[in-house]
Image (cartoon, helix red, strand yellow):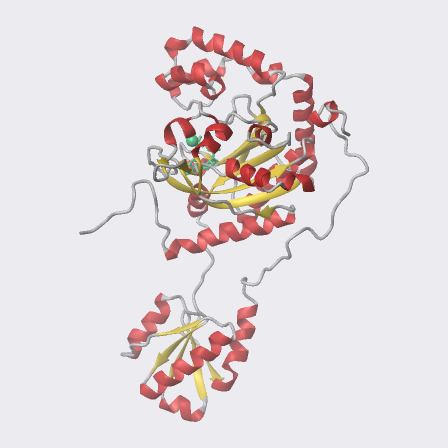
Length: 452
Ligand code: ATP
Ligand code: MG
């Protein structure tokens, strides 16, 4: 009996994996340039963590989370997102005592949503979290990091920016918004109606066409920000301007999660159709405290790898080729044995190569060389073994060049080292940049507490 994979959970086959490796390699490189270090946390966490950290009122926890009882013990959940687990680890290991930290993660997340293009039940996120700094230039730097990442991949994405306020301005606004939405209830979709009580801010995020006129005319938080939030937003914008990152302020941009304050941002792409968001982020100054840690501001984003892969594919950006440098074609039994030995020699020297242990017709072996994407084919038989001479044949152009078998390693190692593979970077920035005094905002939480 044939068993199919789970609905909404995808295989990434070898032909596509090169693209994924590229997305992740560039992420690691760019993040290291900004001082972010990788953290790896479990895929399974106590369900409680998300109920508290993400919020019971969110769709993610309320409807979409995979929860199971661990053999009559604790209620566990497959992580629906990466922030809560990262924060748990940050607190559990007392990382805050070392001062500000910049961490990133990547890996699978799980949400039981209705599967459709760009929306799956297992999907992958790359995310950054920065802890311990409330100043808006951190926000600008993190947004610029993401813009930098997209630019390096050759992806065009639009940045939307907003402020979702904080404890001093949001409650009054929410009351006003709620009153407005209740008054227009009849014109809103069932989802909106359900959210008015539970999570009114989230109503602004509705994509249903019929709801748009009501939502566009809704009161705007942007117009009712307190002085602190207003100043913070202005500084984020000034930082982005200084870094040359273009943005559009969108008063209707909200984050679906409860712990966000002030900065909210999103990158979208036209290539994605209706699921247009490729990455979303924001400031969560209350989250660490909510999860039992000391008051610690933070800001982070998560990017959807499936959606980024779709953009890259649509833009016709081919994943880097990964074929072997040479494919040995054996002409006879003696050649087959020589190929085995030569292949071992090349691999020892770090040169990728392959051969077909079945031997067989040379034409079929050349076909094989083509199929695996080899750069060269090299025929080996008794004749080549005795003369120590062979011919490297360019698999694409069919051009040939003579080669002494004894010099094969040297020749191929030289041409391989000019390839892209070796981009190792030491972890940690090379230079720390200190400013005597940043033109900091008038009213960040740190200042209010008199610490700066
Ligand atoms: P959306 O409004 O598209 O549902 P979201 O607000 O639920 O997004 P976040 O929780 O902020 O998304 O996750 C960040 C990113 O992760 C999204 O921008 C998207 O690229 C990706 N993402 C979220 N849910 C899924 C999913 N079910 N399948 C694939 N990618 C997803
Ligand atoms: Mg969602």
